[in-house]
Image (cartoon, rainbow, N blue to C red):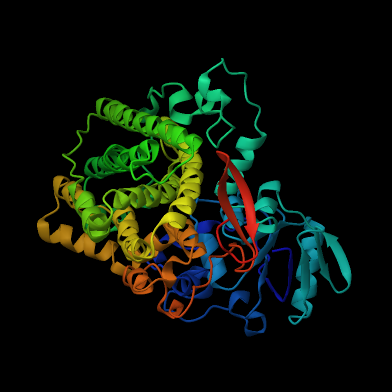
Length: 542
């Protein structure tokens, strides 16, 4: 996106925080329409539900696609819902003197342009739009200008926002660019250095969890920080839970961290490395390049280190907090995966496990996003997850490459079965572990009936589907680029899992905001063991 020409909403308010943009009390909604209704709710509605006299309700500005605000817009908590709520209202750009750092990052990654102008420019634009609600503003993101009434004003995007909004980057492309540009220290002579550089060429020096120092808790638990982001625990705000003694609520937070770590450890050991070994050994005889297989072994080692760091952190927190972990059961996840891949595995044993690792490794980056950015969380916990996330961004790119190659060699029947299996695999990975929540709430003292009520009211089906759909958006985009949903029965399976809108039948659904258009997709491919970018006018993998 480089140019926006549209009418503007003259909000003109400084220090608008994210809880005003997307009130926490309204975040049970999961679609853009629901978030649009929730946006600025306390400013748009009186307590009795009647409209206020806010400019946000002024009919003259309805349909505006540019929001003119003030200084430090989007300060406060780091909730991405604030960006989604603004997009639900139809805004494509926000003009401000400055932005909250995390909001600006979230906006850029979702395709909402956070445009910075001077205070003088902002005041002039507000005056013009208030005087003439039909006035059109033209934002040229490439040139760095915003024009109104024939007068061009200077406007800027941060370098990060420019990459994501104008250049069309996503997190994976950004990671690849960093890996390509970063200086690599001289490595000792090793036989594998004679291979062409691959995606993990600097792995021996830079693998995140393995190369980072051992993260140790000190006195951090005494500083009033949280063990886990409370915003990721919707049941904490339920009245039945809020009535519990503070000590019991702290136990819930600790055990949510434990369950998160148990899930990651089991995921790496039982699912990811099972599939990665098949790649590294080329057990299905796909003719994988030697470099791709060698990089598979590197990832195999990474995942074992991730499991070690997870168990180590869990043990440290248990000792420091004196809150014991409850028994954890990963069997329900494995059962869902077995059910999802049963028919596929019967046709080609091991193919189900390969697709499981593709799914898990391309969605796991979303599971690791929130914790490192949440400054209310204990720093050591944030650091361990950030180390893990750094590795997983590279793994995501690797398995995108691998899927491109795998899909090209499958037989038509295998592709059909795979396409119908993928939605259930995504759901198995991303569905909330309600059995663990149930155990934790029961241990905190809630009755069985109270537990049922709390879970039922904080995890409605619509919310679960919406959260899964958002977390899987990059993986779904990858499948769309390979025409997966066009295969017989695939669209029905994706729709039944809540991953695609029903209107998508009869053709590919619209790509998520920021995706490449159909006739010019950006793709990953393997060439002589190296990761390269290529484009295809036909949209086919090359």
